[in-house]
Image (tube, rainbow, N blue to C red):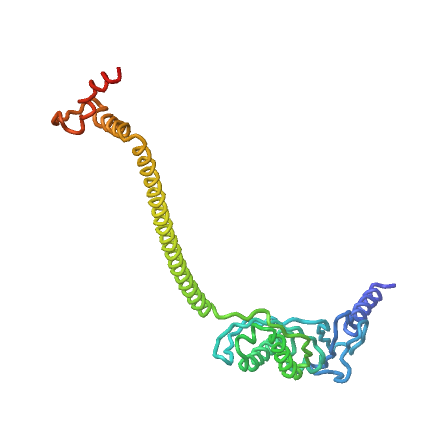
Amino acid sequence: MTRLNVFLAGVGLLVLIVVASSTFYVVSQGEQALVLRFGAVADPDSPIKEPGLHMKKPFIENVVRYDARLLDVDPPAVQVILADQKRIEVDTYTRYRIADPLLFYQAVHTEEGARARLTEIIGNSMRRVLGNVMLPSVLSPEREQIMHEIEAQVSDGAKSLGVAIVDVRIRRADLPPETSQAIYRRMESERQREAAEARAQGAERAQQIRAGAERERTVILAEAQRQAQILRGQGDNEANHIYAEAYSADPTFFALYRSLTAYRQALGNGDTTYVLSPDTDFFKFLANAPDRVEKGR
């Protein structure tokens, strides 16, 4: 075999490889494909959805592949005005599937184009649905029904894109930051007012308790003093009664005892000086003391 024959065989093999690579293509599991001829769909009735090895006309046809699995759209949060004129920020996510590759190609060409169109459709649907509901409904179990309504409207709008909407969910629905700060400040002021009111009520109640306790203390002390006066009076009465009985039993001895008690109290310290007449009643027992001693002898 001459060099020319080897060269021609190599060229033929290379051409065969190029033609084969341009003729055969593989559709993987989870993919679907369209065969285009000069930018137009070669066979509009048969998008390739079965995985495996397939053929196309070389050089004049090319293949566009699309994902057959679930795809996500995560649009940025948008502000929506509710029916009660409350403004909220809503963050959503959507799952969809390319149901009609031909219509999808004709409408948006790429997944990036589909995300842009779906983001617009989702935003418009949210504004229409949420514009008819109140804020408490968004924060209540009615939220599930609201999401179903949004999903239905998004599905209707996405049919023209060859897309089937699987799920639309509200991830977060919050007040805007400036509104939230104003509400937080109002809530803080309300809590401070309630705390001040509670403290005032507590101080009033404490004052009432102290006044009641003081009143009870006064009543108890007055009652105790009254009872003490009664007991003291009864004691004095009993003492006077005993004194009267003792006096009536021996008046002379009783008079002597009382005088001695007076002497002890008046002269007991030894540093007391009295200037009295000798014949006063205070010293009558002292004056008669020698006579009494003689009589006692």
